[in-house]
Amino acid sequence: MTTITLVKGDITRQSADAIVNAANSSLLGGGGVDGAIHRRGGPEILAACRALRASHYGKGLATGKAVATTAGELDARWVIHTVGPVFSATDDRSDQLASCYRESLRIADELGARTVAFPAISTGIFRWPMEDAARIAVGVVREAETTVEEVRFVLFDEQAYEAFAAQLR
Ligand code: ADP
Image 1 (cartoon, rainbow, N blue to C red):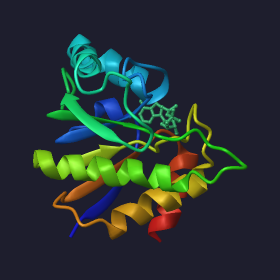
Image 2 (cartoon, rainbow, N blue to C red):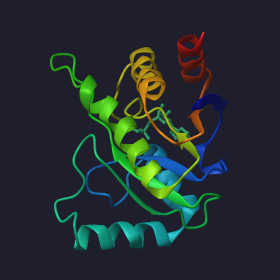
Image 3 (tube, rainbow, N blue to C red):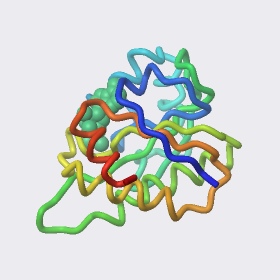
Image 4 (spheres, rainbow, N blue to C red):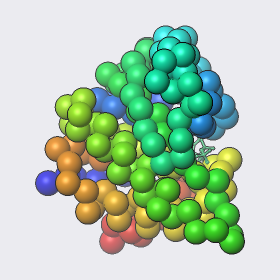
């Protein structure tokens, strides 16, 4: 059984086996969660991302996929980078957003991570409506067959927290 917990706060302050990064396909850093993770995690994470770009991920990481690196100075063993879809009102990309959670959990299982912290992927710079993103995120975790014991959603503000809490009620 996977327990879902909710926390309001900064994901870079969390202690977990794996912290998920809402990355972009370049894997070379960006704004939002990505920027915060690289700032607090230090240069080791970016070095590991550059190494990925130089080896198996020459074109970067595709939307909906996930890959792990060191967590640098974060209080975690791994950062799992996943690339959410940019929200589109005309093109339903829900499967890609669901895939981010599914693939991240698959990587977490491979690593043997028991606690995984997720941000609300795609709800920042990528503009996904929070209620819908929460529905997709919670839905995937509830259905997932995973050995992860705790999935912790780390929500940056009250509105995000409430959207996820509503899905758990
Ligand atoms: P994306 O590009 O996938 O939309 P963002 O990082 O821009 O990713 O935003 C994803 C969500 O994470 C947004 O709801 C944003 O408010 C939130 N967020 C931004 N910084 C942090 C942080 N340090 N910890 C947790 N959540 C954060």
